[in-house]
Structures are given as C-alpha cells and as structure tokens.
Image (cartoon, rainbow, N blue to C red; front, side):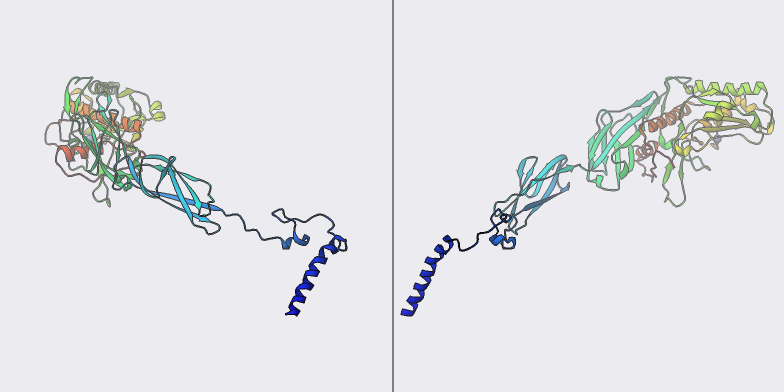
Length: 467
Ligand SMILES: [Zn+2]
C-alpha cells in the first residue's frame, strides 16, 4: 500500500518540476522555418510524415440514360424509360433526382411528345454531398414516312385534294392541300413499306413499295385519269388514260407502248422506263454523210413536212429543224436515209434523260420514199415517236404506233398518241423537278389494284440515276 503511494508521489513531483525546467530555458527551442502540414497545422517535429492523415473530400457523380419506344402509344407521344445511377467515392449511398425540361420526373417510364427534351440528373449522397448536374438532350423523332404527291395534267402539275396516304394498310394520314403529309408509323422502322395514296376521282391512285432510304422524302408523281388535249389538232378532245393499256404487251414484243422490262434472275419483277429529253424542241437534223443514197430536195421537204405536222398534232413544239453540227454538239435526233431499213429509237432511255434519238428511213422494196408522202406519212411519224420517247408499240387503242394488230394502222398520230406522248414527257419533267423515280410504275400498280381489281406486279425501284 505504502509503496504504491510513493510511486504516485514521485510521479507528481516529476510533473511539478517539468514546467520549471522548461521555463528555465534548459531545452533549445526550434529554429528555421516552420514546417506545416497540408491542412495548415504545424508539422510535429517539423516532420511532414508525422502530419495527420486527412481523407480526400467525398465526390459524387451521376449517370443517366434514356431509351425511347413508340409501341403502345399514339403519335406524337413516345414512351421514354429513364435510368440513372449515382456513385460516391466514399462508397456512400447516392440518391438520384431527375428533371425533364426543368420539372421533376420519376426514374422509370414516362411519356413525352416528339421533339427535343432536356433530361438532367443530380446525385446526393447520404452525407449530403451533391454531384454536379448532368444534362443531355433527348431527341425524339417518330418513325414514319414523309409523302409528297403531285399529278401531271396536260398543262402542268396539280395537287388533288382529299387524298389519303396509307402505309401497310394500317396507318394513314390525310394529305395536306400542298400534297405533303407525314404518316407516323412503326413501319418507319422497317426496311420497306407499302404506301398507297388514293382518295381522288381525278387522279390515278398509286401503290408504291418504298425502301427505307426514301422514307424521309418519298415523292410520288401520278397523273390525271382524263386527259383533255389543250392545244393543237385535237384541242378540246378528251382521252381516258389507262396505264394498264399503255403498258400492255404487244406480242411478240415484250413491252407495250410504255416500256417495262423483266430481266432474268429478278423473279418476274418489272423495271419501268420513264424518260425524255431535257429540253424541247428537240433538234432534228438529216445526216447525209451517214445515208447510203442521195435524198432529193423534194423528199427532204416531205420529211420536214411530216415533222412540222407532228408538232401541230401534238399541240406542242416538240421538234425543230436543225443542222448536223448542232445535233452533234448538244444532242437531238439524227435522221439517216438507209436503203436497208426503216426504224427509230432513243439511246439509253433507262437513265431518265437522254440526248440522242435516231430515225432511219429506207425506201423499202419499192425503191421510192413513199413513206414520206402524206398518205403514208404515218410511218415517218411512227419512227419520230420512237426517236422522241421510249415508246414501243400498242394495240390497246387506235395509234400510229400499232404493229401486228391485225387492222389498218392510222396514218397519223391519234388523240391517244398525243395524250400518251405528252404524258410521258411531262411525267419525266416532274421526276426531274422533284428528283424522284416514283411515277408511272406506281401509278400503273395503283390502277391495277384499286381501279381494275388486278394483282399487284412486282416492281423494281431504282433511284434518280436510273438503271
Ligand atoms: Zn415501230
């Protein structure tokens, strides 16, 4: 007991002496600059390694993502699923709060209309530390097909009213008065969609198989069904058009007046040719150097009479007499007199726009050029039709383009010829204007299915470059 007491006493004396020793200056004070720790305190014994360890401040970050679905909602709404997560560098629990366009929103499924939305997230850890706000723009675009519809008329173009555009037989929209419309449809997520435009009695309905690459800008050229000739010999006469007649094969040839072709290995699908000259009148020149017999001035005069009559009949200045230099330089129709044959045609019609046509006139077995005389002038005009449009032959209506029809061929262009020749020219002009190749093929299929009750043909769609 007493020994313990002594120990305590001794210890107390030592404590009492210690200040005295210090105060007496018996210990040397620190010299030189004071070493401080990163928190500003003086480092013990000027040794930074003895500074207290300070943990780094807590940092909170947040990530947010959103996915969009259009299933089960109606345009312009979409279903948006927002997911978010926060991370604390100290491993604390982080609560995430979301705002959409500045208003608080739940994580999970919400609906938003088409357009741009600002989605932001902030994370708050259980210690109260907040993250920076993380924002992103969510751009919602409904899938669908943009449609433009225009119809050719004898005097230009026309947008009928009351049309509907229908995609895959389900989604539809009324076409605007300017011919445009957007059909919101999940078919816009597919590779191909069937687009029908119909609803006017004045124009042919159209049926198109539209590939995805055209969904943003599908332009369809159609035609009025009834063609009233505005000028020329047949002014005021009305022709009831039919694409089915224009495309009806004239055996033994594989095409009708308007050409379309089936190629091996394409499962019976048709390639349609809509084409024309880029400018009219088409320059026409007789190439004597390419002819194999001498043409008299009288006969050449007869030829030009047939050309001028054609302009009058068409009611359009389609042809102009020119010289070989001009035709060589800028295209046109080359006329050659060749004793071996009578023919006509255009170069490269599949590209849409072509430059050259050729008419070859032969005297035939008679040894004379009677085919240039008025009573036989239909032959010369027949070849001029071949050289100015991608026309073959027809037996579907009275036509100077008849061949093997087991009846007398008209000796001049008929109202039908005038209507179809100008139709082809004007449709190609609208194709060029709107940079589209959706025209007569889809007009033909629309007529087949919706007006005639026939089956849809397979059609190969090609771009502005042609095939
Ligand atoms: Zn022919």
